[in-house]
Image 1 (cartoon, rainbow, N blue to C red):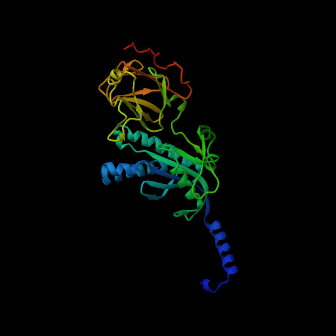
Image 2: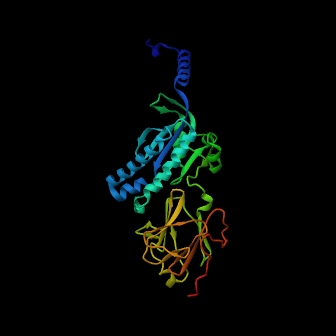
Image 3: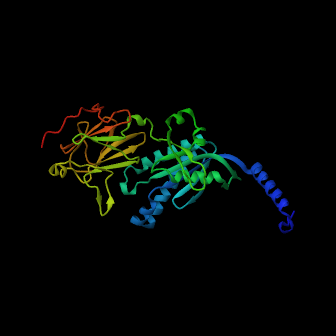
Length: 331
């Protein structure tokens, strides 16, 4: 039946609009778990390494995403640029799938140079959408995209609606965040973070430089680099800069000394220097991965001692799961 909108009055058009809205909700309205994932730092990556390398990085994201969502009955709805939009039958499925994705990314990054590591942030939302099984649309989609864009590298953020749909085990692992203020959304949105590394209480989240008593918080990323050099050519090349007041002793630290790498549910130290590094009294050969945890002690060239601190350790604790700290001999 053809409808002549030009001949209809205002009241008739409003009635038609209401009828269409009701029909849309009845036929296509669903509660669905939504997920946006986004490659972090891709613009800079394209600029440094070119279009081919950039496309390969994007493809790694999509391949790992497809692998992780398959087990949880997820479906990629759309891909554009550096991101992907996926849907799942439940919030629990979306959370489990994206945790698996982050772990697969961490495993895939092992053996690659740090400059070529893949870092992905994710946003999850459980909300009402209109879908015919192919197209997915609605305000909930826009909200989910904004949640993802607010996340830090390697972070999984979710709305409170998603959090309430999770299993008790996953809810216990979630951490509250400051509410998000998003364009086009009048009220602040309660947000949670889902850590994807199991038993984080045992993994380092800070380091203490024993010679200077400085405590430094570790960034939330798969690989954290330590060395004497802060930047090169205006580009930061070490996440944690190792320094000592004595310039002679400071020069004995390598420009690139070692890395802490998240691997699966744990963390390893990888020496990247020919200058000596010890972990809990054991020499760390260049390129070798040595498991570490809260309390592990790292010695560098005999001039610096670094204690790895986990969340359950105080900043001034001298407890160690490896060896007891012995102060450096005076220079």
